Image 1: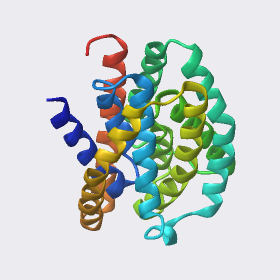
Image 2: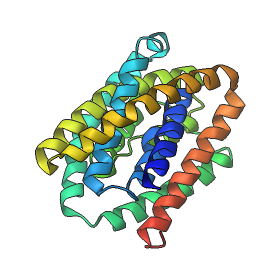
Image 3: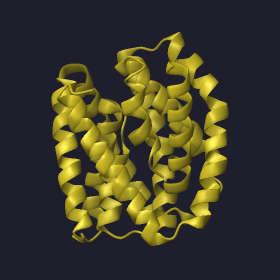
Length: 240
């Protein structure tokens, strides 16, 4: 049963990541935590997400906003060690509850058409929050998804810039995780077994990306955010 769940998780998450620039860590990490220990789930997510970003980077290179990308990376450099400190010292359930509540409330605000103006300082803050969430719970996507959705960023630029950012953030986070939390054979063997599913999901995701317009894309992002927020809230309360 666990094998079937693993296959479904990786395949669907890969499709979402490829078609939206988000989705893998947001969808995969919560369910991987049902099968693996926290360190294992986070590192499997980091490895597979890094593979997707590496495989897609040349195809989406023209869509990258390098100015925003640079500021996201700078912000994340501050956030990465903060997140690792949280992972090693804080109650993870309490952290998940707070993050889940914030994501849920902000998603409702976005659905109600609240918008924010993108600027350099906000880029740095979004990068910092993303970095801290990557090393603490393996989920860099929510801060960026909330930020870019609130600024009405075009889907091509959103996907290209975030996937390029993930190349840095996942690689740096994986190194930090391995150094400070350790690693094991299960993580790397499971990641290797998942690679065919990842590539199948990437192919399907590319087809889906070509077929969805900006409006449908925005609905996708709201659904992903709402799911993430509610899942973190429910899990933090011990209801799963």
